[in-house]
Image (cartoon, rainbow over all chains, first blue to last red; front, side, top):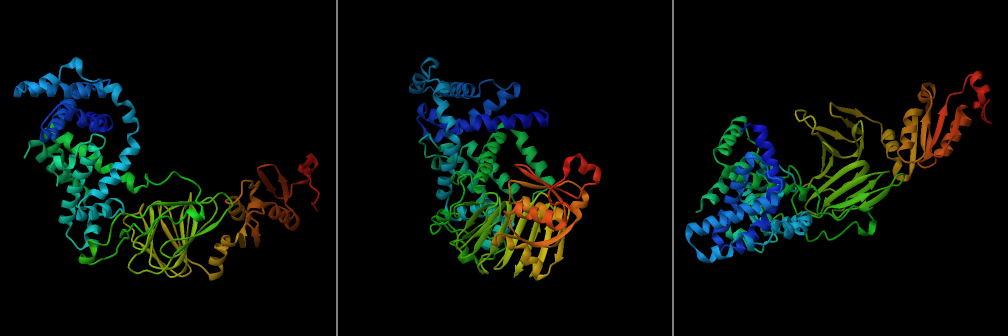
Length: 186
Length: 335
């Protein structure tokens, strides 16, 4: 695939698909008993959605994402022969996520900010110090290391950890999932 | 460990490395290869990158209350619960470092309307005075002192604190001080920094290869995208430049053109110079910033200039040739 197409798809994915993450996690949780699987399911949905979009970006992203999620749940249930989940997953009985999700999605911008603030204060202390100096004070990683008297390698590791925490917190918002512990970041 | 969690770890490691100071073209090529290897890599990376860039909005102050003209009584909210070592170039010992910072101080907006000027006290003991039509945001507590001059001009009287430099960010320019008095003025042509007392460091972000300019008492610099022009000023010149803090404009042999553009910073009604002869006239004197009519009157009487006033402008022209006067451009005060 040419790079510019990748770029367009990446933008679509970031702007249209990723904001659905709290709803997607909520949906997966409602239809999957094993909490440990949520992260893998979520990422499998993303992979399928992205690969399908390479052939053509769907007109209705939300409907598409949740159709993919539903199909994935059904496949998985058949594969594992877990009757309870199959019973939950027939297409006719699934809520229509499009209508259901509109108002929540609309309000997400502000909630994102509150969520981010919460996520910041929930970061482990060392990680938070590094992330705040880097992101809020705007210091470079080198300057963060100098200020805290630690190596740049340590700063980089804490940043990597912080990124995963923040992503998990953003995804968890509104889904009533303790995603941070479930994703095993800690 | 699940496949996806391992991928997420790798994606986070890539992002953190890219966020650092040693990212090279070879690194980028390697990352591109990793991303192309599997869609699972790409979506994991995009997800983390999106979350990481979202945190920029926290730093940009998206959480601050809606913009409203700053009121002095609201200028000093709950600082005490916030501490952050935000200052650039401070070296804090490792032991102290981990406990030196909690959350950043909240952002406070200060704004003045056209023609106004206002002084504010900051939590760290510093004082700042905003000139006409100025917008400034501050994150200041005892441990962190950063302000953003978004537009206009401000005078800073900075409380001395060697452990916590006071940082003024004016667009691409960063001004770092320990304790001093100076002004920063943003205009279309560039950012000007003038030092009344003490020592100030100015960095021009648009010229990263240029070393920072160090200014001491009575020096100033004009930072533009292309240059850093440093100059020595007399004490009087600096004082004149600061007379706006008393609501005055003080001119000493400046062109009428320059004087008019100073007045125009403070007033809705604008002074317009109709011709180059008028624009080149040198004038001096002390005026209230809002007394544009009085200034025009003086030009009329003292210099015999042609002055015409409408609702939103006062147009000043040199004396017209006789032909023009016959066409009806005379005024009562002409010679």
